Amino acid sequence: MATKPTSLPRRRPTESTRPRDDDGTRAAPHDGRQAAAVVAVKKLFAAETGSFFLILGTTLFMVVLGLVMVLSSSSVEQYIASRHTSFFGAFVRQGVYAAIGVPLMLIASRVPVSFWKRWAWQILLVTVVLQLLVFTPLGYEIGGNRNWIDLGSFTAQPSEAVKLALAIWLGMILSVKRDLLDDWKHLAIPLVPVVGVAVGLVVLGGDLGTTMVMLLLVFAAVWFAGVRLRYLAVPVLFLAAAIPLIASGSASRNERIAAWMSGCTDSSDYQAACWQTLHGTWALASGGLFGVGLGNSKSKWSWLPEADNDFIFAIIGEELGLIGAIVVLALFVVLAVGFVKIIRRTNDPFVRVVTGAVTAWIIGQALINVAVVLGLLPVLGVPLPLISAGGSALIVTLVAIGVVLSFARQPEEPLAGRGAPRQRVGSLR
Image (cartoon, rainbow, N blue to C red; front, side):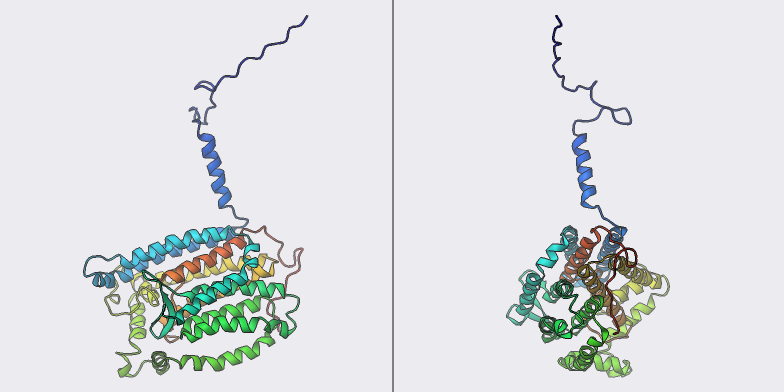
């Protein structure tokens, strides 16, 4: 009669029974947890296309470059403001803003597209309410623009958040109405009243520069939605007539525009409206090909106002030369290429419109800033995205890029003409 074999008790793994690593050493008990952590990190940063890493890498590099240039351009003013105790005040603040903005960008990049569509109205409503606060006792004026609110230990510019909210809302509305855009009535309602309120509040605050950027954003969204260009003729003519009226609402703005139109040839303007423009141009020109060296700017010694903000490109040209200025412009080109790649590969009208609007916002604002420094436009108070000092602008711009990164994570779709029809963009009919 066969006997049932007895089962041997399981032994706990010992040093002799544990698996060995490739180098022959014993595997530690926690190696499995480490491997799981590595897999989790890889999943966290997994992207469907190279566009994600192209945009993310360029953005992070620009933020770091911005921190370096903010430190260099603000050190003298901060040393004076701190009564000769510290060079690093503006740099530390900008570092804190970057430490807030970068994680928010990564979080936004993980948010599904459906979330932005579902909450577009609510996000816009909240930002419009915040913009209304600038007309309360919380609001205050800088350089003739009333677009900031004072929150005690820090200030905020709600119009920056309105730009992002408007881009998301336009993407939602225009994608929902995509089959009705041939009818101008469906385009006008609710587009005209909602955009009118959002932009109008910024206009009432006197911020002409932000108004121009928002209008670029709106027209880009409509273009990428495929709206017929003839429908845009009336709004363009209306805005062309309205901009001079908007510009005339501030005495300081009138002086800057008049000085710019005169070419700053009047010696009386040198000490007034032309001071910033001329010193910005001189700083940019004095850098030559390779610059005077990082930290060696002369213009930042109280000669150039807003050296770490609106005119930081002038300091870049002075310290890093023509080469450094071209590198900065090339970084914006690379960022634009990443955005365009997402626009070209998607068949989702929401993704196309929002990405197009964000592209026009960031690249358009950069071009306006550079044009001001070059003297091609009057001083408008528009910062250089991702590089200039300023918390609201940096944080909101990073979140906007995070929204676009969330689109880059979507499964790649067939390009137009390769298995999927493509929606028309900016038809002339």
